[in-house]
Length: 297
Image 1 (tube, one colour):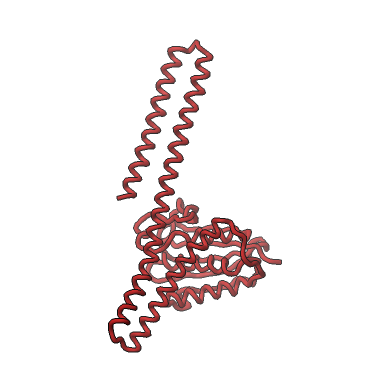
Image 2: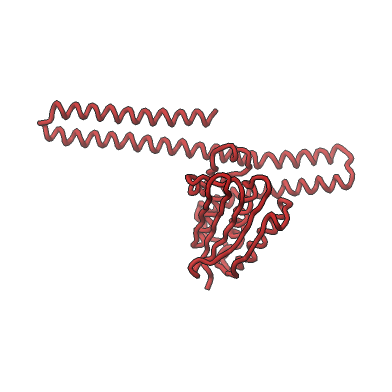
């Protein structure tokens, strides 16, 4: 209901701006036809109309941009609220069960395992938000060292398999080369984990994700994460790296997330003098995400 109301507001202000511009143009044309001999008045009239039109266009543009930003913020707050409340409610439920009922040892161990998984999910969401604040604030990297990229990717792949109970065929890693880069290990690990998590979440049905590395111009190393999932429309390939942004549609509403993962990926790549981008042939044809880092000589 809120989104629909805001869409109506956007349409209203755009229509208002177009209508005002049309009226001004008609008044100006009529004035020129009646007073074409008055050159000075004509010059100042053109200047005045141009300023008014420019002001209307700028006002409408900023208004639409602000409404869209508010929509993204609301979507982020709703997503974070859900990501925080769900594991907390789950942990509370299992604790109440353990407190009020006699539970066998096997069941108790299962409850502990679920609560630990929910705690990891909760900590992951908090870390995403905190990391986004640090990256957006352009804070200096806390630690920079020579990193074995192959080892970092392997660690992330193993963790993703364990977290989602997947086998090696679901997430395959094929190192194309041994490369060392300079950077912050925690940030690189977070970026790669976000790419893997994103590929798993948006895989339709059977998860099949592949991670590979390759050189680019002998100066950069590329990390590629490919999935066979739902794919991305061409018009959304650049927008998905924006903060809070999620591709609109029924798919996004069914997949949990905060809209921060790909923003972190791009920010980490930039902080390490690299870049990040995505490719997709369209909906239903999967996606490939890239991160590029300078090779440490």
